[in-house]
Amino acid sequence: MEFEWDKSKNYSNISKHGIDFEQAKRVFEDPNLLIFVDNRFDYGEIREISIGKLLLTTQQKIIIVVVVYTQRDSKIRLISARKANKKERKRYEQQ
Image: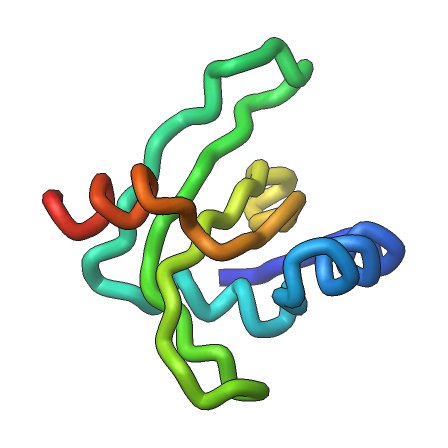
């Protein structure tokens, strides 16, 4: 898989959520990754949401994260990444 992202959006995501897209892309290695379409709004493109486990190397702990992305020209373009809330963690764990 190839990944891409906007550098300024990555810096913003690190500042807001403490997760670097370089680390976030590893969520796609989770064999139990939960994937669904984000249809809350009309974004002008198909956006997907993945919920999965991620090892935060900076803290050496595993967390469940939510990654929002779209697919463009066979690349995954990361849009945001954050720690999952209680409802999202439960959804992941109950699959």
